[in-house]
Amino acid sequence: MKKYQSIILALICTLFASCMGEDYAEPNLSESPYGNNELTESGVITIAQLKEKYANIISSSSMTEVTEDIKIKGIVTGNDIGGNIYNEFAVQDATGALLVCVNQGGLFGFLPVGQEILIDLKGLMLGGYGQQLEIGGIYTNTKTGAKSIGRMSRYVWSTHYRLFGNADPEKAEALLEEFDVSKLRDANYLAANAGKLMRLSGVTLQDANGTAVYAPDDGSVTLTANCANRAFTGYSSSYLVLRTSTYADFANAVMPTELIDVTGIFTRYRNTWQILLRTADDVQLTPQFSIDDLPGSGYGTAEAPFNVARALALVETGHHDPGAEVYVKGIICNVQEVSTQYKNTTYFISDDGKDNNSLEIYRGKYVDGADITEENAANIAVGKKVTVAGKLVLYGTTIEFTTGSKIISIE
Image 1 (cartoon, rainbow, N blue to C red):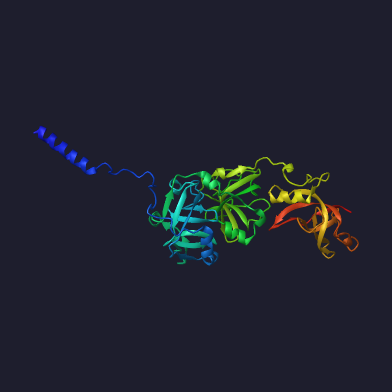
Image 2 (tube, one colour; image 1 turned 90 degrees about the horizontal axis):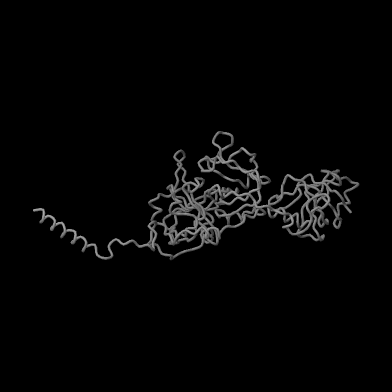
């Protein structure tokens, strides 16, 4: 009896083996196991074109469903690996960037930085969250019933994207741009670059003191949506902050007091740049800097004042200290105001006396800090050579000596 059972069992195994065939269940190693591999690259537009098409929706912080058969293709530049970017990730192409919001954790597991991705936008919601372009679903405020752009479900998302090849972090690095602090308040620059992977170099954190951490949850700092907004020295927090979640892996890391280079996803909330670190490694100490690396001449001292070219370059590269007094020499090329009423003067100096590549001296004082009076007002004139001591700042897009500077010499 056992002999017959063995024979029958052998016949069954042979039958199943023959049904499987040579190609049965062989994996297709050229396709990702994630997403929708049926998507094609038809109807692909750039992110800049997408922003232009939906400019009114984005700028008004409203939302709409995408009904056209359009897609975007880009590189993942930021995700939730460090716990600071929650339920979303950043995608960037050569023209712009946006955030994709998905109600799913662990996105970094299949959407690592450097992953190339195709996204089918038809049927998804597109909107501006504080004028930041986001792709997702509908969020409904349970208290007010108001609707806004929010996260899509993981099931909806799974049918709307396709991955290409293996992640290559160098592809994301190739898209990295240096943030232009001279355009901090430039509305066009903000709209074009919000969401990009960028770097802010040579800055310090205003609240760093050797013990303060990025995002404490002990009530020592004001939190908005469980995030701490940290200001940078010399820059108004109304226009630029480092935003860190109390749930970030590095939330309780001590903020460095030294000059740092900050890399991250530069998002916006209305007119404020909000930098989102991806991991703690996005903050690095600024490489040692030498004044001699800058164009122009001088060292900002009384004995060797900067010329205007070097003073401007110092601020443009972010290596100035807004709280430090420096000396600059130049030729008055434009006098905007000489006020005996307010006892100060606003004028511009340049290296050649021409009205370009100039440094503004805003509401400065006369020699040794004396008031502007009827007796000395005429001395503030085009063509005069001056050495001025004051504090260099970037005010909007203008590089200037801020209020309180003084003339050291004039001839």
